[in-house]
Image 1 (spheres, rainbow, N blue to C red):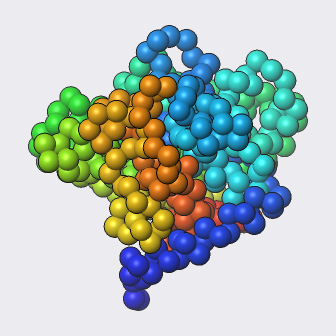
Image 2 (cartoon, helix red, strand yellow):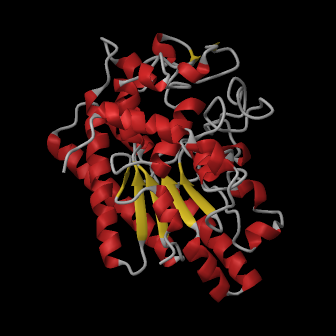
Length: 366
């Protein structure tokens, strides 16, 4: 079978982008979305955590392009990928942080509708990754608490039914890879293999735990080529991508692909899609102008080399043409990048989501 050229896939991406507006007006296609992960998916969870060590984005210039132009805790100038995926699924907005509703009565959420977001910036797959954050294992525990509350309100049978039709979205892994690299920037092939194997194994355990708690539709977003983010580039003498980080990322993504295939084959009713932010970011870096981007190495907001030495703070340098930047800050994508990634993953070809795309997963009624 002939493979589409990179240029052809870019053109397909551009065509798909036109579907965003139409998707926003549609009715919700699943009862709820439950989100787990790190800063790529956090919509404000860390705002509710105590301590000065917590990674935060609830200050300018973050949120400058968000409705009402206010910082929300998202590491973005506007929406992140989860927000755009929720819009594509027909929701009016992304589900709220669990910690913002945990102590309040919300009738919709209590009936298993809309969903909540457990993602916490700085967290990883491993409990050892991150400081003063909500680790992935704790995020799963928080979901279990919510599941029990839903069962108590509408009955266990009704809860099982609504959860089986809901979407469970996971976006994590990058922080684990950064932590490993920080401890050993020149790992041997064997060390890389062992780390990747253990990381994928733990991720698989989290998936199994969610399955045991009622999840049946699992949507995973893989890790982009993080070695090409402004922060790693700022560490490289020549300003190039850091190859070790990208090698680890490719190994991890392949391991996740194999693990998901294994779970799909062994767990009854388990359906999944892996959305490739890696493929989207690579496409933008290879063909920036054809996708409307002009800057793919330097962050829009930050300071130092590539604006990659510090995060986006009120005193940081801020670009004016934000829609032309791939990166918002030292590690995260812009609103424009997230919009393109979401539409590619939701509606795109096997290059951007496999073995089916997110739309096909959402629409699956079997």
